[in-house]
Image (cartoon, rainbow, N blue to C red; front, side, top):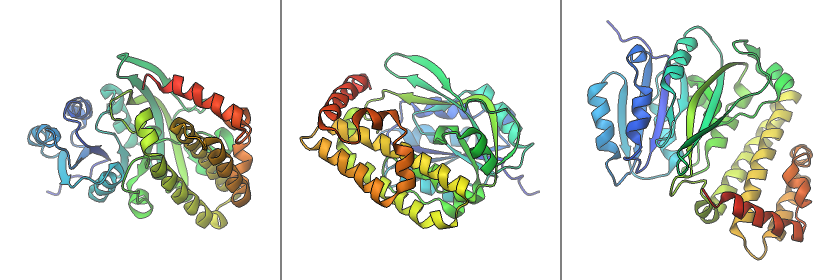
Length: 334
């Protein structure tokens, strides 16, 4: 008898997460859903015991957990590999240093059996690794649970942010339209690239993903952000190129939605510029905003609404330096 198809593939990109991968995989492996879930762990050239720890789960749950090893290429490359090997109807990402709230994850998997949508959204919770505490759930506000929407209606009525930690996509859409850059900061690509192909969406008000922050060496740590500023800029360029190519084919609502989401990524890139704390950061910020204004007016219109842009007046030198100092204080515990 042929094995039944999995309802959900979970792709776990892991690099030197031997101290955390057990927590991640334990949270995903519940007896109630082992036949429904496929966990694809991609060991991205780890030099610790990440692979050895994962192999123990492969032996214990041979029909659920699979391990793929590859040379180090970054989170994006590892995720691409995982996507290629995914076979479930739906797909979501869980980083190797994060985990899920198991009882809610089980509910969600059962829920996925009852719906047929292109994307399903849930909540996530941040966990501060130094303070050892969970923070408030990040929800998609004011959206009723369990009501399937046409995606354009979903955008028009609620205008939600789409983040990787919220999102579970139809696997066929991801396989066809998502190819991530090799390194860091590819979460935005994972959520942007499927957007033109999403027709139906649903929100389930359930806290599932636990996003660990303040981890040494994490890509969002200030040191990594300073070091990888150029890498983040490359991702921004690729997202803008995608937007430019896709824009003529989009409906007005989806076009507007993408512009809004990209403006958020640009504001995030502003943090990278400021945390570098270089002599010419005010000039760099102004050049960035001028380029967006000239080439991408719809995105710039959304950008102008952001408080961070208004506070710094798009590159005012004094305000930029003041804001850089504020960011340094804000990020010092990460």
